[in-house]
Image 1: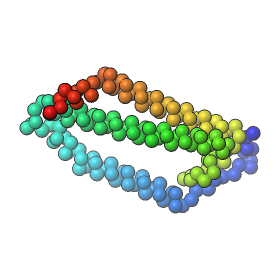
Image 2: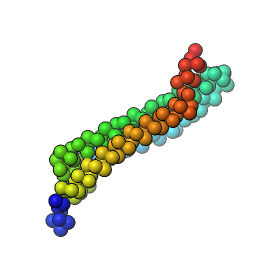
Image 3: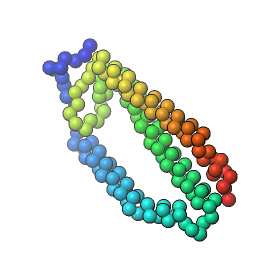
Image 4: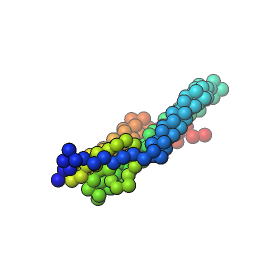
Length: 155
């Protein structure tokens, strides 16, 4: 049974978790900006190197595409694993957020049917992201034969 709205209890955030989350966001933004400002000119020079022949430039481009696709898939799989774990914990505890889970802002505690819906949505999101990642990978490697390109152009 759902918890009545009038007597909803709030799960309060802890300052340490909020500071950690803010530090992680700031670090990620700083890393991305450093990559754009210092990495982009190097990548452009590396890809358009006039001393390299066409096969070498094609191989470099293929490696960059493989690296970006691999990074996106790795991030997607990590996120899917986290979502699936959350779905399991919510379902097992029959409440959202599960006991001991850190929150970043005051979150209403959901129990019963609303918690089960949260678990289902987390599970659906995990499964959807894995299937989407697999579909994109399958399409990319079918449409653009990167593996063959890397194999044929291998020195």
